[in-house]
Length: 184
Image (cartoon, rainbow, N blue to C red):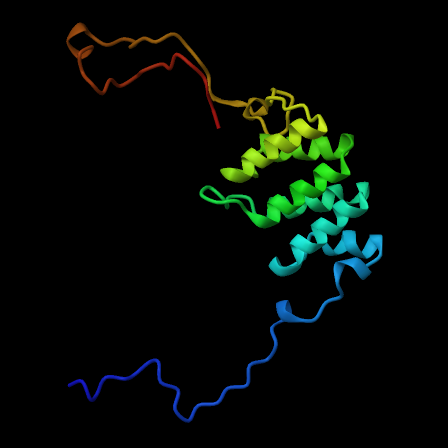
């Protein structure tokens, strides 16, 4: 029986030519790129290049790179509950080095929208404190806040209409009005 089982890990007589994947292409170093090319390369960079590109943008203090660095952080949203996300950490360090009002707003948005979490959130909060970012709670005028939606069920007083006394103890009454409005 064991003689008929295939060995999945043997590759006797099989030769495969592996093409270089697109993410492994040789790219110019971050230090040789001009400012526009560096900013354009940050959002679409691969894992290996993103840290170097973010560090270079921070070293040059490129204020125009703030949206690209924020986009880089948003790419890794949802990761890092247990450990620091190196790409987000590099982008936050670059935003800290750049400074200014736009960098402060970007860090604030990353924190409020829960893009960073876990140990990276600690770095983001310290970065926000370092560059003077105002962390605000969302309000009804904020586009991500659910208060701008119309209510689905109108509120009314809690009551059981038009049922006799013997049916009021029923756990599933026929007509129950809702006390608070639901939003969807």
